[in-house]
Image (tube, rainbow, N blue to C red; front, top):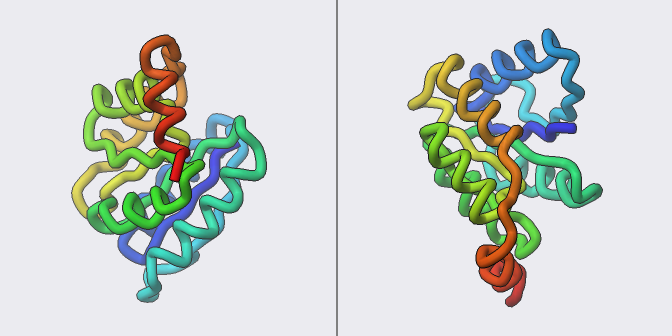
Length: 142
């Protein structure tokens, strides 16, 4: 299950990606926002985090204008490992090395097709564990 969160700048890309997921029969939960009306990204990153943390098998996709604001807010929770990815290689490494559970995309700087390629890589790549596990565990310590 995929959790979507976005602000007004990420709304259009989120809707395009959701339509693709629905055409593939992939279940999603959308915590908003639900229009291009200006909103504050921290509210939606927080709502996304709550849903992602309900089940360790859930992953999030958060979208704002640059992806930076959503990344900062999402990563304030020590159990969230949000990665702003602009390439499939970043998405692959975010999962393999960092066990990222949230993918953040820059809604104003990425096309639908590129976003879908990045998402596919993120969703199909597994965490390698091993030498990376001790580092990932340190991320959750405060």
